Length: 228
Image (spheres, rainbow, N blue to C red):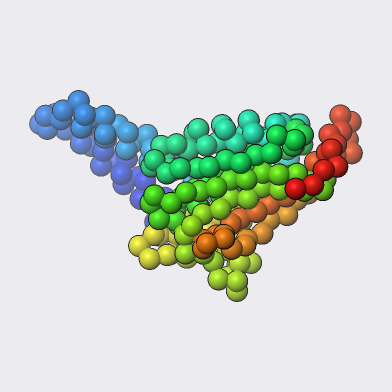
C-alpha cells in the first residue's frame, strides 16, 4: 500500500518540479503532457485514498446504502464516460436489456463497484482486447457481469480475491491495492446482493453480481417478474 501511495506522488512531484524549472524550454505539447500526468496521478491517488476510507467504513460497519431508484443504463454510461482516459482506447461493449426497471441503489456506492470492476478488467487483460458489460433481469434481481479476456483466475483463488489486500501480479502487470474487489463485494452485500467470479467463454475472468429489484420501504420498486 505504501508503494501504491508513493508512486503517484512521485509522478506528481516530478512533473510539477519540471514545470517549475525555468531553465527548461518546454513546448506547449510537453507542458500539456506534464499537466495531464499531474491530473491523472492526482485522480489515481484520490481513488486510493477513497478506497482506504471505504475500508475504514466497512470495518466500522458504517457502509450503509442510501437507496434511490436509478436506471442502471444511466449509471453505466456515466462510469464508462469518466473512465475513457484510463481505458487507453480499449473497447467496452455494453449490453443492457431494456426491460430492467429502475434499481434501488446508492448511486455513489454502485458507481464505485462498476469503476473497480472495469479498472480490474483493464489492468489484467491485454491491450486490444474487449471488455464486455452485460445487465439482465434474473427473477427479481438485476444481474450484472463484467468480462475480460485476460489470463483468468484459478478456481482455488476465486474466493481469496475478495479478501482485503489480496493481490496478484500477472506477467508484467502489477496487481492493484487488493481492495477493489473486497470493497465492491462489501457494497453489493450491503445492498442485499451477492458477487462471484466465473470463467469468460473463450478465456478470461468474469465478475458477476446481483442486486434485488424490490424493496420493502415506502416507494417500493418492484421487478416485472421476467427472467433472462
